[in-house]
Image 1 (cartoon, one colour):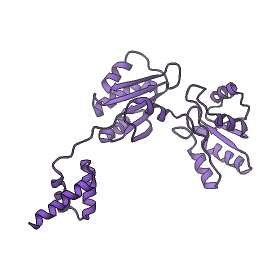
Image 2 (tube, rainbow, N blue to C red):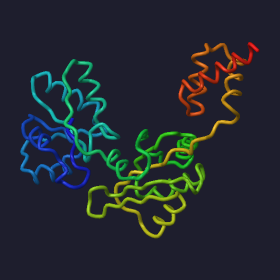
Image 3 (cartoon, helix red, strand yellow):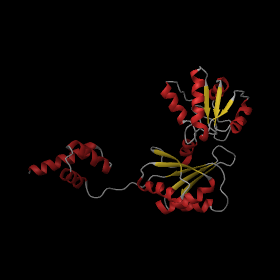
Image 4 (cartoon, rainbow, N blue to C red):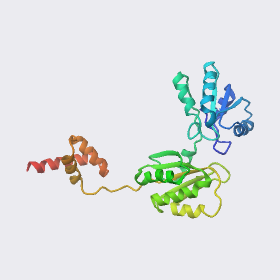
Amino acid sequence: MVATPIGNLEDITLRALRILKEVDLVAAEDTRHSRKLFNHYGIGTPLTSYFEHNEAVKAERIIDCLRRGDSVALISDAGTPAISDPGFQLVSRCREEGLPVKTVPGPSAVVSALSISGLAVERFAFDGFLPAKSKARRQMLAALKSEPRTTLFYEAPHRLLAALGDLQEELGADRRVAVARELTKVHEEMFLGTVAEALEHFGHGRVRGEIVLVVEPAAEQKPEGTVREALLKLQAETDLPPREIVKRVARQFGLSGSDVYRQSLELKDGEGE
């Protein structure tokens, strides 16, 4: 599994170049697109197409090649194979057959966009391409109302404004987003601002290029009531052991377990009195 540049042809590792030259066959999402990379670096390895609509059939042919002892590299048009691109079926079949699969890491639009977005990076989720239809898209975006992680999507340029409009309807105009466009290419752009600002920024002309949409996490909701009240409520309404009650309340209030445990002991002392 060989990662290839997402735009700038210089973004390929020495190992990736060596592997692409040494293998017996390279399976590529679009052989015409990959030929540009091969010509640039003088790679003469035979290419075969491997894309969404022939993935199942080609996977079996590649398995046959591997059984014969041939080595095969899988590449996508850009970035890391199998990440919103063909590859999963082939890897799964290789695992079933006991055939070794190795990774040659490199560019990924998702990680690249996240790293320069300016939004929280400690926890994040990638949800692939947003649905093309507004109803399905809004259902997916509505789930982010309380999502504590930064969420990333791929989006087509001609649907960006519609997606931002749905985002505004579901999450509000003030939720911050980053829009990464044409990463590593000549016209690379990273926009960071509110959804309303993004609609204003991209609404004045035709949007072009590959896009990663990054949505900031939901604002942390402060729990209602006090730690004491939360402890008493769980004690009265559940059969959870004291240790689990302390854990849950600590997580709810963002406190250490030892702090909540001390307060639970104070409750016991109060009961004794």
